[in-house]
Length: 600
Image (cartoon, rainbow, N blue to C red; front, side, top):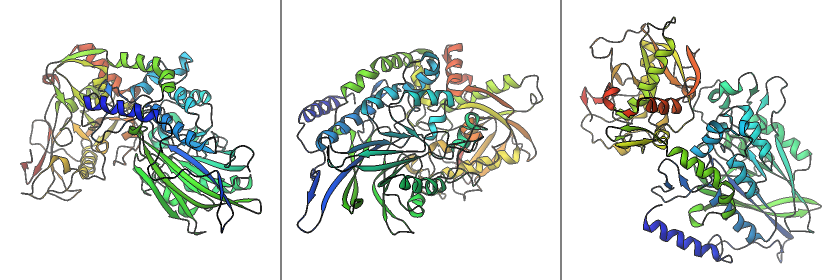
């Protein structure tokens, strides 16, 4: 926050941090290390803290705004904030057993992470990755590999893992040649719930990554790694962990709990956490991520044993910390969980940990300097605020650059005569190119993913099917019904799964049923309908082309794939020209209608 209210909040947090004896969770008593009730045996307790989807956030900083992070709910972000909460819990528990886990998506997502993968890659410089620096200070016990860990290739991933002071787990990332796990599948942690001198508890931690990696990062993993089903992998390894002494089993899974996938049936389920809990006996709890949801505490009944499996998901970016508490007894030398539950801690209640800040300060400052580099001047302000439901110049900027790059690459080849279309999605609702100086952070804020540019050939019929699929993004709005941009889209379809296409003119009739909404698809500037057998080269990002979002017809052999990052192509285009002028690229070609009448 940059306002005076933000400064006041920071002063209050500093005062609160000094009160070390204050309870961390209102109304939650500090558990004794071991206790004996009048009617029962001694009990011990274990606390497991969980993070997920930190996505390269160390500082509480928005690199795209060049300001302290803030959103409408005044969330904070970053490992430095998480570290303060973790240290508070450790202090509260006075050295008793406390484990800290992460469920993946760690080294991608901010300009800080991108800088040390692309501009000064750790594989070249030998520098320690900022997420390794930060997480080592926090003293994690294990991290699961998320799908975004594979974005920058296996060499960089291996380098990062080597820099960690704790295991990186992924039981279902399997060497394609040997059939063996390519990474450590699980770890057994021996802890003393009652503190030094007490009995030892062995906690098994199983890591499961997302099968979608095979699609989303096909270029990095094809022929090298395969990703078996997460449920089947858990069923394979949980008994092994039990046989090797695990008294309590926790799964750290990078997958949501909905049981659905953003891709088709060609790969195992993307979000199977509830299924794992239901179908695999012997699991006490699952920390999960991937969907960026806040799930404080959810119990799932195992159908084989009737046991209640505790599950929780700690939101994203370091905004939340999951706390799982287990109460245990010992019967005839064996541990038994008699109670368990989870709470959620909010990082906006604490200040950043100074040790984490100091460890990453040089890398943070270098990134800030880089993203503030001016690349061009814009003749007027361009905003992405309406790009979901209006044709806007700022989204056309992406499509223009993609079209230009692919057209130039195909010159003189067998596809040179085909019209080039381009696909882009409104990744950000807040991106702006200001009038005047446009900086790298402005371009990065528009194109927030590390996608590369590819191209395929589609027929007119395939283009129409693609647009119909994309148009399911909108809710059905009968003629005459009020239109509210805030609710115009189906909340089940994320913005990044709504695509617009340049190079053809088309209407989307939002009063019609899904699958019947493309009522006009014509050649540019004409009334000539696009023929079903017409052929087009279509510029598209690697995520979509490899199946992300499950769009029809797009998964096919590329006619262009130079492994060029789209965000860098946008930066290069702006730097080469020095001026961003909508007159050079804005061509309004699509609109929302109802019965032929424009909605806007």
